[in-house]
Amino acid sequence: MLDQTDHKIIDLLQQDAKLTIKEIAGRLGLTATPIHERIKKLEKAGVIRHYAAVIDREKIGLNMLVFCSVSLKNHNSQYIEKFERDIQQLSPVVDCYHVGGMFDYLLKVMASDMSDYQEFVSKKLAALDNIGTVQSSFVMSEIKHSHSLPSKGQVLATQHRK
Image 1 (spheres, rainbow, N blue to C red):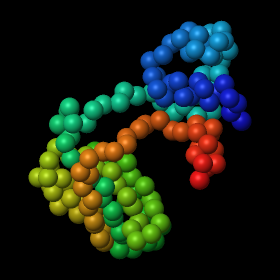
Image 2 (image 1 turned 45 degrees about the vertical axis):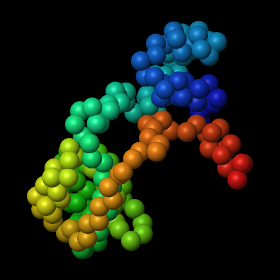
Image 3 (image 1 turned 90 degrees about the horizontal axis):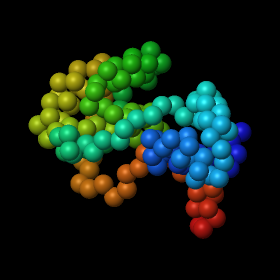
Image 4 (image 1 turned 30 degrees about the horizontal axis):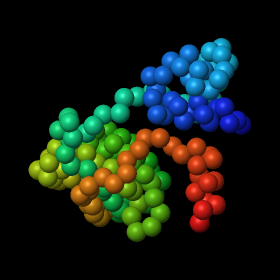
């Protein structure tokens, strides 16, 4: 079970994963040793899965962001498992979610331009077995984009305001 200090450590690391243990300890008014032990515990428990740099996609030429909804023709477990294995091999797909509703999967796809995205759909996605329907939603502008998960306190505060 995570306590308030664990949540504060997580919040700080989500804001800046390059913070040193000493800097985190200073911000929380603690010494470095317990902070180090807590971070190791969070890593071992899988709460902190890994550390990564957040890249500006447009600065590296990925100017198009598309949400692609996919329905499968057949819903037997072997077909679902095969689709899920195959989709992991397609590098333009940065996120894939199995969803309920009109479609089976929601893909977050990045491409340099419309031509690049069209090639992805026609040559890579369409080449996968069992693809039924594909619907694309093109992002016109990003209103909010975050890699940080809300802390438990932030979620509860939002719920109480409603």
